[in-house]
Image 1 (cartoon, rainbow, N blue to C red):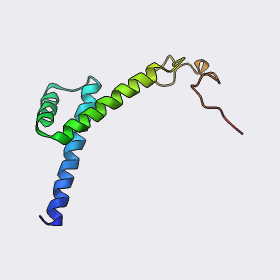
Image 2 (image 1 turned 60 degrees about the horizontal axis):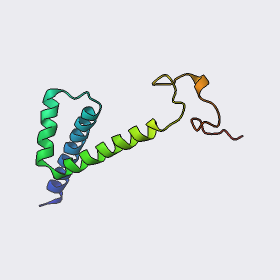
Image 3 (image 1 turned 135 degrees about the vertical axis):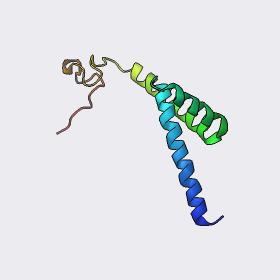
Image 4 (image 1 turned 45 degrees about the vertical axis):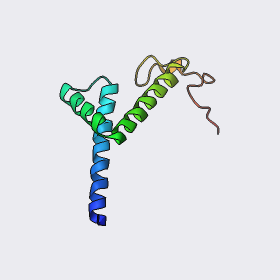
Amino acid sequence: MDSDQKNGLEQANDSLLDEAEALIWALLDDSIESANLKRLESLLQENEQVRQRYISCVQMHADLNQHFAELPNMPSSPVLGSLGDLQPGTGMIPPVFE
């Protein structure tokens, strides 16, 4: 196999993993469409690297859920919340040093 063929295969594999990751995150975000779910299932059955990427994404999703569930005084708004909720010393805002 020459280097052009090898580069082409690597690019195709990277593209496949990118597609799979987008589908995985759509699944984890409960926004995947039926046709995309079938595509993801097919990719998972056919490709070990896709299965490994799935495990990595699911682990990150679980870690993030656990991390943010443990934060005290979460803001009331999903974006900024009430700025009054963010008090120094609560762990929500890092201290500012001058």
